[in-house]
Image 1 (spheres, one colour):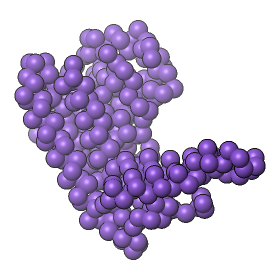
Image 2: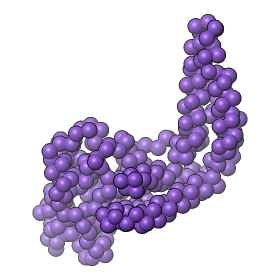
Image 3: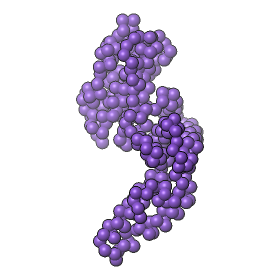
Image 4: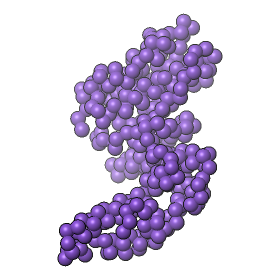
Length: 176
Length: 147
């Protein structure tokens, strides 16, 4: 296994945002069966080490592609963009909306209004799906996107990351 | 992770929570957020005719350190001129609250928020001054369990 292969190529997937999860899972299983360190038990030390490193590489690749935020971040880097980091800024409009959503969730939680919390959770899930839909339309294939497209994609990935944290928080409130 | 006494004190009794009408004369609003931890912070100042900050409000959704940082900043800016408020550094906030290294980004967020509020006030009131950069959000470590 060539560990310089990009993660999409490693699993024989097209380099785009939209993900065929079934294909990824199948390809991951096939690959792991081939590189699993156990299959190298009888081989020499260097073959064994290579198997361990290959398996680690495949695991990391799988985790990144499977995660909607990390997959986006990885795609940015595939197109020579900096990874998400400290200098990234969310738009004021997005933050304003999010502050309102947080306020609504807080009020519902204080009031013990489970229905309201669940309805907020449903809109949040819809918002996450919407962000992913936009990203799928921005990263369609191997063609180098324009700088504007990349900047737009970055904002959507950041928004998705932010929404994910809010979703964790809502889950906690609903389970509490 | 253990919070310092001062963080807990601000977390349990946050000062100046709330909002001003952002269209009101003399009000400047700063909105900043950290995508990686989902924190969002709104900090507002009310500036008097003499250019002194008369009052401040904040709303923060985030961890205890983010809430304490913004609460502290609203206390600090009252009675300060815009230039004095601009000079507040995240290191002072972090020191006052005894923030551990993994929580420094919360104090940076609060510094960004006050700078953004001042920039908003200046752009609304047409005060001439050096161009303020839009406050930057920061990455942040995974959420601690605050419960």
